[in-house]
Length: 281
Image (cartoon, rainbow, N blue to C red):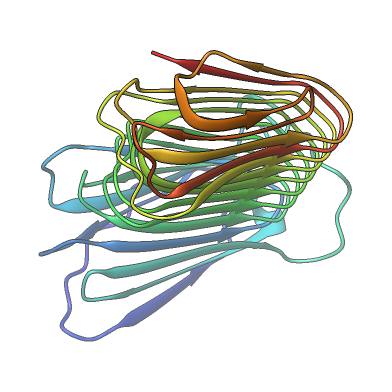
């Protein structure tokens, strides 16, 4: 069932308990850059760009579940939209995944938008959105593709995949590997348990101190040949393989420091348990 679009000058709130097995679907007209906030319990969320459209569309697919177990609340104030999907009562575990037993929330937004997406238990994905992005889940993987602007991702239990990013990146996971790729101006990437593979693509220019750290896992870092940085790499239990052309460098099996292209902001790479590989491209 598709609800009619309502345009008002002031904020309004709509609360809905969906009928069993039905979809929930709504479109919000916006005039300028939207700010979208999504807060959900036990469901994955996908956010996609619709390019130059002037609306935000939110759709809930039950995937065979009874949506009457959730309380859905939405509020719009100008170009700000907030969507919440909360359990009405104590609930049993619903499987996580893009096609699992839990419902799934799909958000379509203009390419220029800010978004904060939080789930208590579900995977998150954002594609093609340019703006300030904040993605957080307590349990699930996080993926982003072709984003631009400040990007913050955090999961307590899951892998992190960032491809085609442009801007700053703050990424962390307590348990999972990290696959990070983009044109970055600043990076802070941390995993407590898992490996890190990071590529700073051509066009990356570090503007402030950056770090890539792992407590238990190897790190592979690839940077452009023309990157300016003060590289510092260390491992408490492992070896360092360096293919960077560093000046004024000091090196041992587990510690390395040197200037890349005359130096620049610090780029710290550390793992407590694992090897480090540094490469240029």
